[in-house]
Image (cartoon, rainbow, N blue to C red):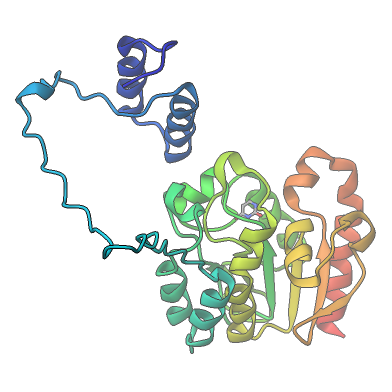
Length: 279
Ligand code: URA
């Protein structure tokens, strides 16, 4: 059934459109738009003659004993403590494989439903340096690996300049890479505070299990997650600590692609990292 502004034809056209290979988020936005317009039912391809359908017999109403009014039926309100659930799930993981499985089984993050892949990590988990980015983008969602798009290619070139890379087998030269979120946010939007809070126990466990010597935070989102503050322009290049480990915030390579002038600071940070590792 549709509202006075909507003909069956428009509803049908839009529902048919939703059958195409649109993504979850596009489908969802279209559906929400239909609901806003007043649509209450999805229309099937073939018309349904509702006179031919059996009329369900209404369930007999419970009557209150004479002289008493029936109490309203209790409404169950179930509040899910997603952060608590994440904390419990993360704590049970005793190695990276178990952590990956626990994250994949976690059902409280809505982003999971719109993502094509679960993106956990890349590189060498024994590496001295662990890089933490924001979230997978389109290329990463397709590949199932972090930092494989344009920003990832720049990241590889940056670290190559100090003789480090995710493909190196030697722990001293290799990198271990992950993100704050393992699922792509719609249209690559910045992760919001509840999403970050929900996935933080997993990220903290990830760092604890990987045991890097140094943590690099790429951009504001990992700074928000692990240091509780943003302001990468002021924070970058200043060594701090995260979970007891030396930590260096840096400009995100996607920012460097948009602001190549900032590559000078990024180079200074890479040299600082190199000096820290050999110091
Ligand atoms: N940007 C990120 O922060 N992470 C990725 O994996 C890709 C782009």
